[in-house]
Image (cartoon, rainbow, N blue to C red; front, side, top):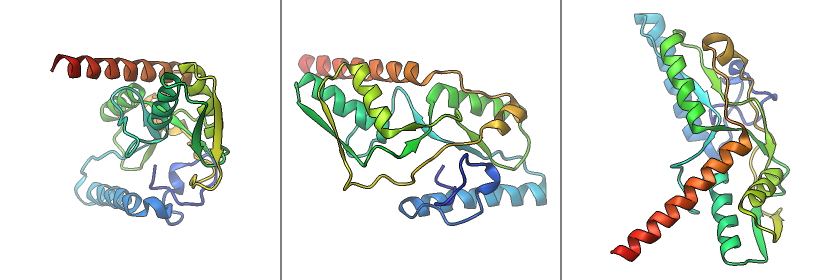
Length: 211
């Protein structure tokens, strides 16, 4: 996803990848991914080498990185709201105004997309993997709070960075080329992710007591 230029028409189409410089905060990562894409295209032209290049949007789901230091937005918010619920905190702070939007795809759907592409796609051109739906960070925060049953105040800190205003993919190519469409509803995926996180916390606590 970091391969796309900082300024990109929405929804992002695969043909836009080369139309500008990536978001500066992730430019090295985005450029390295573009290099892999260029290499696979060159190998395909010269040697007939078959390499596929998928562009997945933000993944979420069980076994994500649930650490406040390294986690992305969904696990970070799950941690914050779960801890606030357990500790009866009066408020939770969320970075940014909440107006920026993001698209998310459930990890199992992404695994299916990779499988389908591996079996049925034989072209070097990149393909977006996502849902084609976006949600504002503000609405995401309220949804996670609802699922964990947190009743306190949500404070949006507008002094903190929030990145690109919108990120949403055109996912028609994946459907047309190898029949992929994401099946997991967003709220359903969040519930499964939160339930997994709670079980992991319980499992960790039991192990600590045992040892």
